[in-house]
Amino acid sequence: MSRADELFVRMCNDIIEHGTTTEGQKVRPHWEDGSPAYTIKRFGVVNRYDLREEFPALTLRRTALKSCMDEILWIYQRKSNNIADLAPHIWDEWADEDGSIGKAYGYQVGKLSQYPDGDYDQMDRVLKDLREQPFSRRILTNLYNFDDLHEMNLYPCAYSCTYNVTDDRRADGRLTLNLVLNQRSQDVLAANNWNVCQYALLLMMVAQSVGMVAGELLHVIADAHIYDRHVEIVRELISRPQHAAPRVTLNPDVTDFYAFTTDDLVVEGYECGPQVKNIPIAV
Image 1: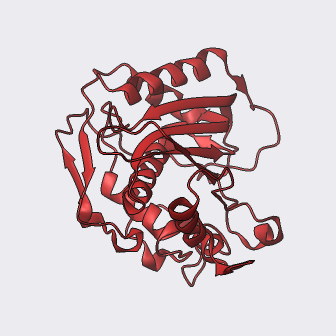
Image 2: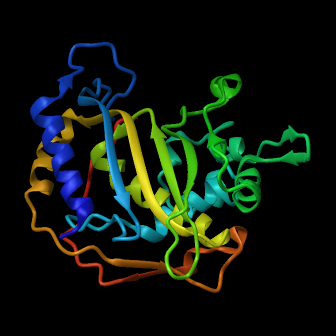
């Protein structure tokens, strides 16, 4: 059975059975009808996925992996903050009349910073450091720029990636690249596996670009929550049969991070339950 399914079911049960509620408190999100969107939440959820063993896609329902990849490319490769550059419509609610989500996500990745050896944006610096000094403990991206928060249509949820290399080389001599994803807040039903798969794909693409093997993805969520109108949907979802994880690979001919497209994603044997439709989204 899929390890991602096991972790997801355990996490959801823990939130529902042992979480605390925000009901009656002052909360920012609301439902389409204007009523406040309360949650059951757990503080400090940590899940670990090993990409050398399997790709962490849920089989309880299908995760749209090409759409996941497109959004991660939108942020870290295209460095865009405009929905015109993004195929999925997941950001439409937060875009202005020009399609911009403000100085968020891709805008922050693409901002140049001065280093002694030149100017680099965040992603270019990650790639350079992984190639030239892979055992540095300073290789990361951070989207939570306090100076620009007031110009973001939504504060970054998944905001920080820390890359860490381990020397557990196999027969081919490659190093292992691991990633810590820090997330301040997560709508577990709508976004958990979406984010997990996104950053698993990011890890795979970066590792392939610098000649390494994708290893562990450590996902740290400060506020993991299930919205009040999602609880029964989640109960049904986690009661479903679980299947083996799909085989997910990238086109091995692509070794330039900026050359990847969603056409380079190969998904095989993805057996899963029916899609959950009409999930209400709090905004």
